Image (tube, rainbow, N blue to C red; front, side, top):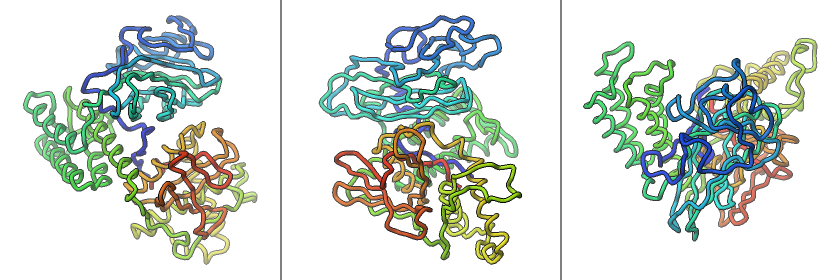
Amino acid sequence: MRTSFLLTTTVLLAATAGHAFGNLITNGDFELGNTGFTSSYTYVLPGFNTIDGAARYGVGLNPQQYTNPGGVLYGDHTSGTGKMFIANGATNASLVWRQGAIPVVPGKQYVFSYFLSSWSHVEPALMECRINGEVVGTAQASSTIGSWSAVSHTWNSGTNTAATIELRDLQTAYVGNDFTIDDLTFAPPESAKTPAEQIEDILNFVDESVANGTLVAEGPGQSGADHLGEIIDYLETAQREIANEWFADALATLDKVYTRCDGDAVPPDWLAGTAASELAEEIQVLQALIAERVIEISDQPGFFHLDTGFDVKLDGFTFVNTGDLIPDDDFWWWLELQGGACFGMSAFAQWYYTICVKHHDNPIHLREICNNTELFPYAVNLAQIIAALENWDKMIPASFGLPDKEAIRSIIADMYLFRNPVLVLMGQSNILEKGHAVLAYRAWREENTIYVSLYDPNHPGEKSHRIIYDLVTEEAWYGEYVRFYPISAFNW
């Protein structure tokens, strides 16, 4: 299973386009300590369990300073040895961080960015960003301890001449909900680049870094020169793909470069030197710029009609919510799970279309399975179990905190890029209860309304089901469901 780029202003893989330019945030890297911002949390100094209690924070080198000698230990995002904002989350959505009176130019686009991580794997933070009281996006922290996720939100200044930026944690669990924040930036208008400009700058950066010795090619299997040549070929290919607005191809090509300079052991890096990590960051910036470009396109009235090609009766089959995830017999006694079949069957339908139909790769022959009346129930339920057990905890958010506008944009952008249906979780409120899972496969715009066609395993084979989104009120609904969360990372 591959991970796709979640194309929304809440996406966690996007890096700031402003880090290379002037930053309007004061003390955004927290190196000056507890100054330049306000918080409704209680400030504590390092010491044994001083941060033990809801709504407390410190500005320090690592979480262990505020817990105990056996506590979590990892460094800040800036350098690994500097300071960061370290917090034990509140039991209400109170103010985490605020900075105000930031001068802005009216009618311009700005980018607010920061890095978010967890120092507990339980109930990760769900950070909401507001600018001048307007919610501009939310971001879920990783459940992997010490894993920094880059967050980026866009905001148009409109008639404003000043901005007040706030972060609030919508995760209100008492246990867990421990997070760190670092490297906040608010980019001035002139920092924004086009994807074409950014890829040109990256190619120049590679040339300059190789010449001055800060970027060195290495790695197994080939000579350094061969590896460097492949990297440059990938970047030039991405440049052509961007010029033609083949954005899905460009993202795939850029991933090949990023994974060879991101510092991870798998796959082995081909590039080393002090400029390698900066190159990885610049590629993330480019991915963010591509995401913004796709969203701009999706906002244009003439963008729709968009169709992934999914059929509600794939090869004559429908994928039905049977009500229970696990068959009720002695064979499955060790898995006492109920419900979840809507998620499992939506995931199964997506997998069958993407792998078996679209790419003509048939590891499972459904017709042969269906002819075996004993095997079929177990095969289908096994597919649901695999989908749910291996991915449920990784992808279902603790809260449906996405504004409707961002959820719909994310669904549309991911369908546009990958031409695949997108799994969508939905709820009757912001809390994950009375939820449902469906598959979004088509979208179109009619005047001030966007329609998103759904495959609903509660209504197998029916084409009339859709999310309706009102562009004027910025509200979306599907029957009783009013909150939506696209699982864009679930792409086979």
